[in-house]
Length: 372
View 1 (cartoon, helix red, strand yellow):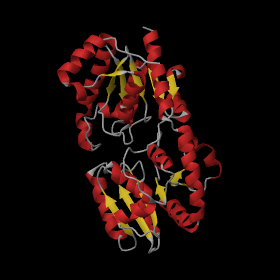
View 2 (tube, rainbow, N blue to C red):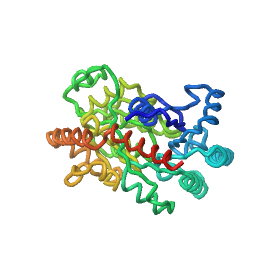
View 3 (tube, helix red, strand yellow):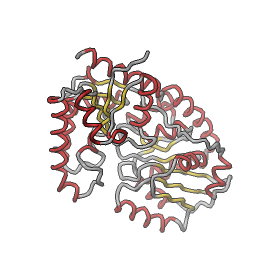
């Protein structure tokens, strides 16, 4: 089925390989949805099409709309009020003046590190109330959104999150990946990839390693952009202490696609000791590449793992002692990791389907046009 009459403005920055880029590119390719965005059109052409075509406005990451892309520090709280006022005025202009339909993908129930919790909760509430459709990636998040914001559950649609398979022509096996990173083939490799932040538990992993005895063949890879300068300095300090016991590869930036695949292929396990999460996208990344993960037994994690969760012995508590014990147990039971690898690959292929995600998103768009 093809369409040529649906126009969408993804209200987010479009970064290569990001969820919005993949989703909206597939919508354009699969259903001929017209994507209107200032990054592609330029500001004046974008404003002209926004006014003339009145596209569906698809909002991603509500919390990014009023923080100007700045890190969450005390300084940000001083200017956040300006961002909130501008954002809410924009929403009202789009929905009430231009009569655009609003759609939200609710990636998080609240910001990972709220600075003004009651106010930010109110901004989320207003956004969700104004929206015609709300997409979420789990039944757990749907339930929590209904309870937290008193939303009509009929306008919330659960759609799968597509699996993360990085588009790269580099074909690596574990041996070649480790050679390129300078890691022996016989080593045991654990990795933490993605945003380096407290909510993802980077401090819990480092404190867990601090509790462990030195292990000659243990390598740790930490890769991703730090959430703040404070986090970066903390990680550097901890790595300096831990380097006497372990071999640590530290890449404190947004890693390239090629590097990301290399790290994943080189890894035996991932460690993601989330403090809290509502859409554990890093878990999906490890699932997509068949890498078992030490991770807390949160409801949304259990939902994402499905039948694997029933006897999964890599669940941890979000504290250093539990994470340390799980790392040691994983090293002592390496043969079981191969079974998890197979189950992870099967789960990702079965449940995390971009085509289904795109089809359900498009059906939601169609419903909005039919109600005009």
